[in-house]
Length: 584
Image 1 (tube, rainbow, N blue to C red):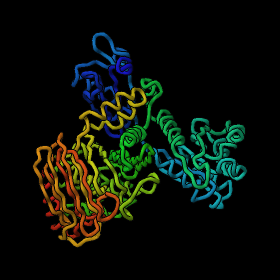
Image 2 (image 1 turned 135 degrees about the vertical axis):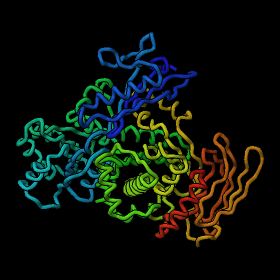
Image 3 (image 1 turned 45 degrees about the horizontal axis):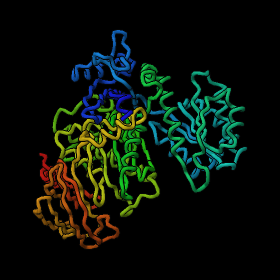
Image 4 (image 1 turned 120 degrees about the horizontal axis):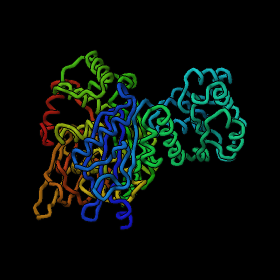
């Protein structure tokens, strides 16, 4: 209980690319609870060009909700809390505003050190604009001109296993050192070296006057081993440092956080990693956060975290990048309205210009939900390539088995109804076997990740509270069967002793009532060698499941999910599925 006494209240500010949010956590009945939040538009752009105004507006909104004052007459945070109830005891902050970092990656071999550098870059808000390796055969002056022309924010340099290559790595760094020498100090990129640690002293002595050097343990200590964790933490610090240099107001926010500012994606990953450590099964936890700046995919198995940040699949200004990455017809397949490809592209460009705009009709809602489905689908399929080795897959191109899936982001959290949110999650992620759907309606996941560093007890207790919405347990059989043929028999025994039996046919989406707060014993018997994650195809078993807002969801539509090309058929199916889930 010492932590409760040391910090009875905590305020977390999350500065996103579109919205700035402030979250208040306090002790209620000897346990931490999420109390309230305030929100305001982020003010990094015109006319303010300073995030501080958006932070203060979010705090003003929180003040209106709670009646509590957080900022004094001197415009500074009141900390610690005063006897009159104003102020807070501790403060934390996350950030994801601004353009992604422009990153050049450097490595010896394309498929080893360079690939590891690429993996590292994908763990924060970054865009790889160039790669340099021994294989590209460019001369030093050509590499130098490339770096000077691109003007990257950061260079990630890998290469050499522990006590391995040295001279070839130093040779690669020559162009970076020359580029730094030719640039003014304030325009030099940050350089993160994550290669052979034995040559760090030589790199420091040779390049410290021409580079903004940072070091992390070797990301590839041996040919068959990749360790991202320590380098990922250093990259997160570098990201915040770059934000402090180019976005007014970030320095003040970091001062309030006593230097503990973290990227929103890093904080989100912490929460998913923590949840995976709490599980007693080998199945992992998947977290998806679909925001304006990026789609974030975090997967953790027994504390081993894989974090992927995909700015090209954010729903804000980067929407145009999705059009470049994904065929338009792939987005069109999710639509339930008659729309031409040109009209869809026009909508995407308009949304990218005005990312704060909200859909004002059912047609616009359908477009944005189709974009959300494709963004999550594409990001997840890329992220799977870097999932931890202990992940177990039911088949090629499918998600591994997960114990729980935590989803957040405005388009999910603020859906017109829970059925729409659940269907977006099911369609885009296509979970397999038995899993639990959890919706972070309050969008506090990243805030909890930031809070964990200041007060781990708070993060634990809020995660155990009802701040997250349990949508329900999903049963999704995997296997080859004809549409309409029975693929699963189940019997559910309620706490009251009442029993319900169901034979599930391929191609259907069904719900068995199981209210939140209740549990039931579920017997599963797959047919036609379908797999529900109980050890082998065709193997059944008994498990205890918890109820949720939507009940027990049986998704036997197939994996991978194939939707009808005919618009009318697709529209009728979606109307039926939404009705089944309790929507409209």
